[in-house]
Length: 108
Length: 117
Image (tube, rainbow over the protein chains, first blue to last red):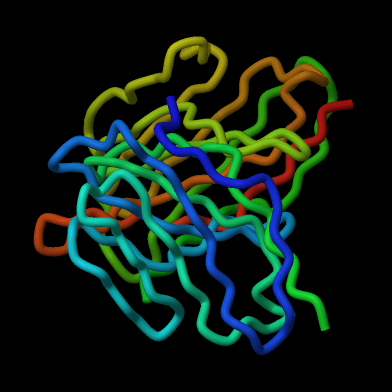
């Protein structure tokens, strides 16, 4: 079963930062936090993952709280193409159990 | 980046027939592949974990005799929906695991839309 909770939907203005929160209060010490997104009728796309430290790549930044019970995915400059469902997944790195995700709509 | 393909991208079949869906890792070897199912407006549901050269492990509630999985090589896994019925109509997605320094990333295929009439 999914071990994460996310808001059902969010809006973000184009060009602004999109901050997507995720709660994972039952995360265990060896579990990673993964973020994927799914654009309608496509397979999920990998965004970023982390264990304890904050991570940044060309797509996004991942901020994990010190107690690891929550995290935030940051898209620094949202574009219309970032409109998608974003999934936060907690896993040892093997099976993924998807929650309901957050539907992000970037508004022009 | 790692690329996973699926074939076909969509298929329509008649009730009672069987359908095979292929999942390939194009530029890496995947010892483990996963199969998911997604109904409209719902999240992805893990169906089974497929390891090369061994039997697949099915999630609770997934009928192994109905959803046959074969992982014959490090780059190919197949899902066969046997005796398909309209309730099997769904979006089927595979993924391949790419271990990197002990951290696993899953790369997903584009999905296969199955419609059973």
